[in-house]
Length: 213
Image 1 (tube, one colour):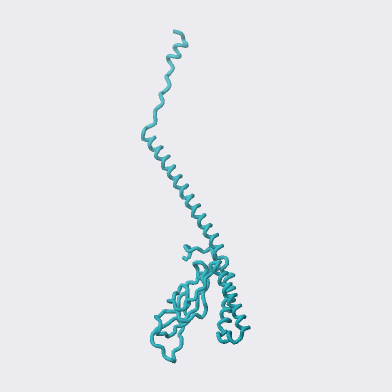
Image 2 (cartoon, rainbow, N blue to C red):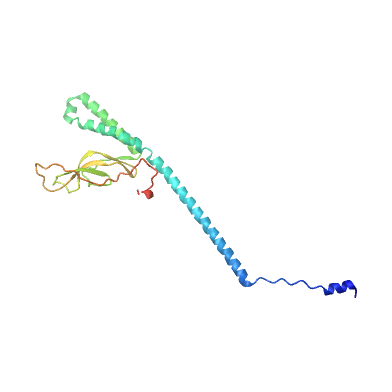
């Protein structure tokens, strides 16, 4: 036997690889699964937040377009009020007696109708609640009036019509409400305090969730 062979035989054999303990492998797998679940949960939360942000942004854009006319409408409402006040001062007898006055009143009526029609095209609706039950969400009670012919709480006088813009109140109707009972000749209307659900339309992006309304 040669010296080289003896050296080869005398060399120590390499140590065999020791397999990982089963418990350690299970722990590593469980850790990886937890990390994967956490990553998936974070991704789902991020997607949900992004979707919520997108919905809020869409609603704000819609509200801005929907209620953008509010400030302009408020400025025009007194014009409509004055047209109606002018018409109310002209009696039917005066119109019959004066053809020119009748023609003028007819023109004012036509102007009023066209304005109200234009309002409705943009979601602005007149609130004229005479004969209806008092609604604090739409009406502002200015006085109580003795009127035994109707149920208490009925609107018996409208001092100024109100208006809504889509689903929001643009301006409450100013009304007199029946008190009920027997009216005496010396009775005078009494002021009434009532809540008004008058939403601030100067900030059209305020959603129902931020107030809702």
